[in-house]
Amino acid sequence: MEKIIDENKQGENLIIQEKKGNTRKLFIESYGCAMNFSDSEIVASILANEGFNTTKNLEDADLVLVNTCSIRDKAEQTIRKRLEKYNAVKRINPKMKVGVLGCMAERLKSKFLEEEKIVDLVVGPDAYKDLPNLIAEVEDGRNAVNVVLSKDETYGDVSPVRLNSNGVTALVSITRGCDNMCTFCVVPFTRGRERSRDPQSIIKEVNDLWDRGFKEITLLGQNVDSFLWYGGGLKKDFVKASDIQKATAVSFSNLLELCAQAQPKMRIRFSTSNPQDLTLDVVETMATHANICNHIHLPVQSGSDRILKAMNRLHTRAEYFKLIGDIRRIIPNCAISQDMIVGFPTESEQDHQDSMSLMEHVKYNFGYMFTYSERPGTMAERKLDDDIPEATKKQRLAEIVELQQKHSLFRTQEHLNTVVEVLIEKESKKSDQQWSGRSAQNIVVVFPKENYKIGDFVNVKATQCTSATLIGEAIGYSENN
Image: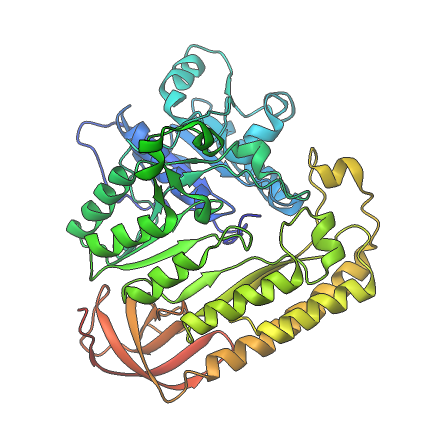
């Protein structure tokens, strides 16, 4: 399951990079997971070569694209509401073209053209390089659709335009697709099989970001731990690879080390991991390199072995506990976050209590918790009845959220009266007199601005906290500055 960033968040479409001579305007919004936001940067780059610069103003756009999420029904309903907004603008500006990108586009395909009369083109996650041809078709008066899933596309040769950028942090896509057929998840159907990107192109992008002033990257994929480069192709083809290819293959732990060594002062994060695929060499690599942040997002989905089996999660409760124990043995101060699904088909009260007790054992730093949303085409939708009443789902979710807030406060309090290194990312939402940034454990930290600036690494002594934020005073620049 992909982590939801904020399904109601609109792309701010900041004009980070304008190409001289471009006269057409692109308005692009992203919803859902971090991969969608990364993909939108790739789209903006491709279209920059076709005469488009990005704009913040919907009304000015010649082309409007919305990058969609299919992980839950609520996310899809948000997209349909945005299309209503586009329709209102298009009535004023009928020359404006509207396209739907991403997972929802792949899932619904040509239905979008039939149901949403304002949609001119529908483009799946692996077809963005075909956008120039599709736009040409639309401009010739024809609707255009390309949702073909690729066996090798990674967009590794595209230099992304950094949308919504603070100029400090950036996403670097390293894999696409997922081979883990969790019964609740549409990702394997909307994004296809796992394929990894050439490590040298990743390092080139990381070096370029550093040269442009970026201080932190997040290596991104549906399942980063499955990264495996041996010369290209699907991961399953590795069994047929030559002995030389296997001997020189690059795993995720190898890639982490390459990135850490390439830019020793750049912070490195990664997301998302899967418990069945996270190996201890990754954790050991994190412990070896100070610039790899001590945070692992490790979705568990349920604390019940019976439900985990029904979800086709290839780990048990006991195996998950052992992995957590190994992580904390190797990196004692490692922050761990979770995804949890509440109300999966047949979930009993005992199953729910098993999830609660698992949370009590781990005490996650933070988490992303959802009620189960049946997704068309998944194994759960085909084989299982969505039999848990909505009222029960909501009650169980409330209990899970309340428990997580308790644990988040506990974990944040552990940092009181300590000094944490913070990378300043932006102005605090609550005060224009404070900076906001994150610690290596991914905790938000706010402190008075003084003479510091965005992009500085600052040591902050934490004196107060909420469940999600540390509040403190800067005591000087860190050695990474």
